Image (cartoon, rainbow over all chains, first blue to last red; front, side, top):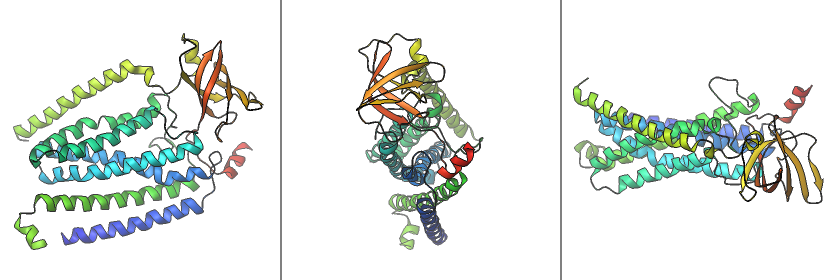
Amino acid sequence: MFQVERAYKFILYSSLIIYIVSLIWGLLFTQEDFVQGNSYRIIYLHVPASFLSQSLYISMAVASFVYIVWRVKLAAYLVISIAPIGALTTFIALTSGSIWGIPTWGTWWQWDARITSTLILFIMYLGLISLHSSFSNYEKADKLLSWLAIVGAINIPIIKKSVDWWSTLHQSASITLTDKPSIDPSMLYPLIGSMIGFFGIIISLVIISSKYQIFLREKNKSWIKEYV
Amino acid sequence: MNPTRKRRIYNILFVLLFSISGIFMILYSLNTNLDYFFTPSELNNKEISSNKRIKIGGMVLSGSVKRQGSVISFVITDYENSIDVIYEGIVPDLFKEDSGVVALGYLQNDIFEAEEVLAKHDENYMPPSIEIKNDN
């Protein structure tokens, strides 16, 4: 537990520094975009948050799979620990996208495929959280939550491919695994930095959240009493 | 692997298979209804009544933007077919020739009367100095 504590502090502080440095770099030391001007700079919040909102769901689904098949209790704790943080990042992604939409598209909300599927992701996170808290029996709650989290994972490829499958107001991806990024290197490097930093901050949030969950569920165990 | 775990994995795959095919069937039947806008070519093959509010999207044809007071007229094109649009009001800052646009309104005798005009931008981000270099 003490090693985890130290690792957690290391991850949190180093990723905070990485994120702040990338933000300063991106906000102050890059040129404005040739079309969008300064408003493009919200990319340094919007892209990391959107990326994390989907990655967190995938990790939730993987943990659910591990719980259903091997009945590893820690995996179940991880599923319910990730859910609120996933909801938070999805909320940040939706809000920053709306704020970005006003100066660029001329609207803050449209029912296009990308925006709607992201809203569904947000509602799914909230649904999973409230479902889990509506049970008094933790084991039943964990089982149902894991099954639903796995089924809901179908939404992730839909969000990802929505901009390619349908015509949307949202533009298609700038950074892909296969092609050269369509974002200039001078803007790309601070963006990658902000994604790494944001990732680390979220990982440390997940660590705190799962620590809370372990304490909550194992509070009667003797090792917890010794630790506290 | 022990048989219980194997059975659980099969259960998961089974549930996933069914839900994926369910979702796929829903998306397939909705098909183009999930599209946010029509392109001018799609409009050509469709009969759309003049009292139905639709969205069309494409690029603003270069040289087509004309302003008369607060009325602005332009041509939306997908480089195969195009459609004339008139709109009264303020267009977003990103609205310009040769860039993406989405208009919401009614189709009246081959002219699209827009109520709302939104700018659509692409996935390219670069500083203005580099764009000048690329043009040369």
